[in-house]
Image 1 (cartoon, rainbow, N blue to C red):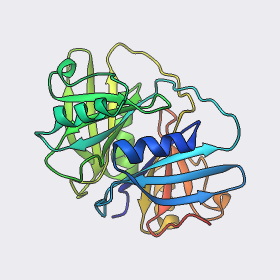
Image 2: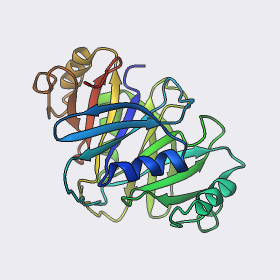
Image 3: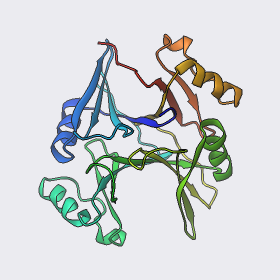
Length: 259
């Protein structure tokens, strides 16, 4: 489906350690790999990934690199069955995963762990999707109206849920008609007017396009940021940015990483 979120990219300092963590603890398998001269991208997901499900892209830049986490992006979230939050969390604890925020401290609704690079991984209860599949990616925005308008007008996304509290609001967005199993983007808006540091430990979100050039032309007609057009990316993909500077990649639905 055109516009569905295809993957979320995070940068890692030790590729083998990160691969071991995600394959051991979440049961992920390698879905694809791109070996370049200066970096390696590995795409991971559960074995029974839904056709509209998103994958996790681990980017390893060759050499001794460190990254700043920043606070403009928050976390990825993975699914477990409704009645398996506590047992799934305990399984991770038994396997030696860092005890960050247990279910009890989160009111029994969700929990958090961290991967070897400190990326936060939320565990959420869902009655759909493969266990440990990606449910959403949370990014923080400084102007909720502007961010909601961006995803609605530029990408044709719609609300699939919201949570408004005394101090913040979460808005979940997906393309109209997307499957329940598709990953959502969670826009978090804190009411206190704070600003955020982007950091470089998180890279981007990526959406899938039936036709890269037609999709890009539509984005330009809707006045999206012309950050890296298809021509500048060898007509393989393209990038725009949201109002807060979060990068959004556009890739063709039949995209295959170069070998």
